[in-house]
Image (cartoon, rainbow, N blue to C red; front, side, top):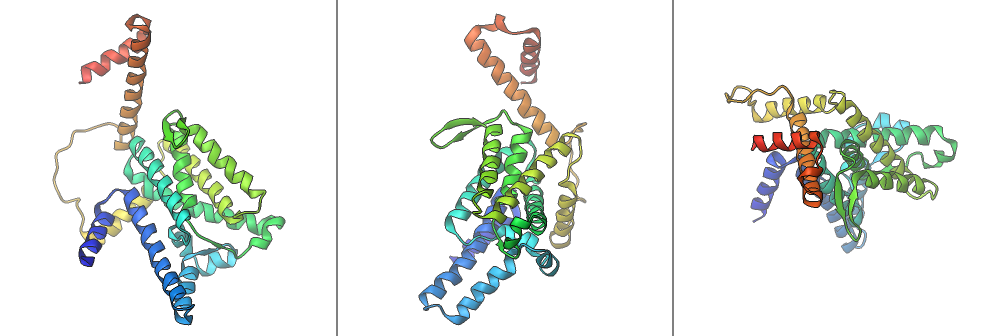
Length: 302
């Protein structure tokens, strides 16, 4: 049974979509830390188990300082997969799932992990920079930074920057434009800075938000910041899993990338849906010549 579960998890990590992979890795790290915390509690705070728990936390958390950046650089990556509180990881993973699916739909799945990593890294660097140079923040130097929030915030802001008019259903509220969701997320983080509650986390969120915005600005200019990371992953995959470049396949040539094609397809579909809504409310004669042309072209593609 255990071997079957482990095999299923491995398969999901290897072949699942990027959002699923990130959720599995975050959850696995959380469970590992939680197991030692529970065992330590049940054993009456065993010195050995306490030491293991503290070692894991220190090895994975990012110490917000220039010295921490120099002596434990790997924590720039590991911190964004580390959680110790159940509700912390729950809301991060739920948000990652929602907005990761939206961004994947309008670009491609290969953007999710690179953007998550870049958002987390920039979030940590922004936190170190501000806490090191702003006098009022310097008491927070050396505090441990953990959580996926910076990477998740990058994905939220990227989705809202790319398709701000798209609506998502929010619990107890209903359909809300992504633009308003992004504004609310940034507003809360800025507001929390004044309360000195989770200073490092809120600064990291703002760094992640900056990365999400910059990524889409460059993406719209035809510069994909995710490409170097994806090429690195492809190289690693080739080392351990073999390269698929030698396989022959027949493809239809397109003058645009898969991501651009998917984006245009979604934009065109939204245009058609809006036109059909207009017809149902005001009749076909209410359409402009441009709207009639769009509808005509869409009908000929089917």
